[in-house]
Amino acid sequence: MSARKPVTRSGVEVTDELAEQLADEAEVGYDLDEGIIEHRGRGRPPLDAGTSPQVTFRLPEGLRRAADERAAREGKTVSEVAREALERHLSAT
Image (cartoon, rainbow, N blue to C red; front, side, top):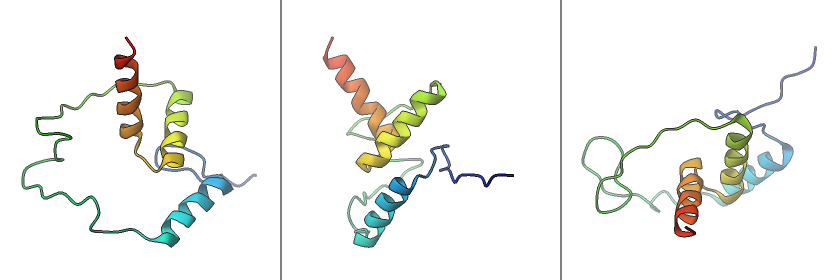
């Protein structure tokens, strides 16, 4: 019986390269004051001055895996990667 490969919560396989990247990031440390937004309301803070409605949709497994990998490489969330891709797509039309 072969050992199971580690994966992230979203199902991305944790390769040696990804583990090294995450370790390097952690060793540098995190500025806990950076990015902290004063928010006194329910739920997550809006992305801009207005409201930010949530959009939910399904993706093929391979596309989700690619988004997870891109987000990890760029130090972003999958939501950030998806927003940027949608903005680029809509500005190109």
